Length: 497
Image (cartoon, rainbow, N blue to C red; front, side):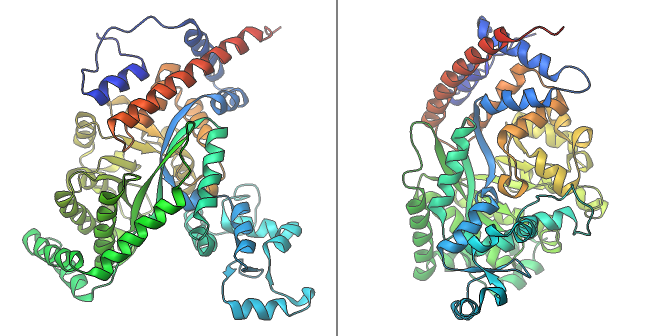
């Protein structure tokens, strides 16, 4: 039986195309001490959660590959953005009012009569603030007993509350994400940043729905629609403006401690022409600037339109991948649980994302055990080195899938690569460190596996080889420092009496 390389060495070989099997170098003393310290933290039926929190807060996390920009910003920041833009917040609906005439009329009223409050006024009243943050995030969902909407609705509804200010404060939002990442030793984030431009086309909608099972006719419709969009100066101008907006917002974010890259995304809740044209703009934009490293599709997968049009969307991705083979695709696929949709709806989503759309990474992959082709899916993902992005907090909150019910142990057992990620840490009010705490406490991986997982988030990033190698060297140094600190900490521990 071959021994594996250390995580850093394995990644260096993998990105260079060398074989991934060799003799393991001597394990450093600090790494061994760190492994023993970690093993003590996860031992027994009740892992030391406080100790694991301290451990993972300090441990280097290579990157966060499944990350939504707007869902990563905390409600506290969005309330500040409301005042920055001169808006107000309706204290009955807790939605942001952007109409200048309505805002002016509200401000002319005595304070006691106003129903639309500034962010500062919201912050000044604890009851109002608590009601707002309950709607703009999952705060307090599990620690009280009042009537409330279902958790998946709570989660997805939050975006409608803070949406009016999310995309007008991009630089500030990115800086908040960067600052928080550095504080918890995350070196790289690949964020789903902005919805790509789209245009409606009722004729294409009709053709797409009619010909979803006729590949020849559907491809003809997509070729005609693509040619029209490709030749449209106005549409191409929106793409150029879109790319320029990303560049402007992201200027100055990267430094020697931190790197961020951006995925464009399409919204699977829209009509086919909007989804397709948004894919066209996404792929084109990714060709225009190296900061844009991939394309994704978002929106609650269990809703009617995404379920109805799922195969259609996968065929659209296949079409676009044929035109832009160098553009990477990460795919929300199988973010479904038993009971959310009829059983037959759980049978094919990951399969089609891999076999039809050609996804390079799978986001969530939660319905794996229910997929009709599950063994073959795992073999394909293992053989083609397609990782699954694991989001334990959001899977538990949205779909109620956690611990032994989560398919992570299936992926691990059958050799499918995986990464640990956050999804929407501002909405669910957690961190990447806490995702690792859950991973360690629930699944009991060895320290070697935890460390490999951190490196995997660089290995599977949508980055050029040279960038992966740079971030890997950086991660090597950070782990050396971390393990030295953990060895010193362990030496100071007082033996139990």
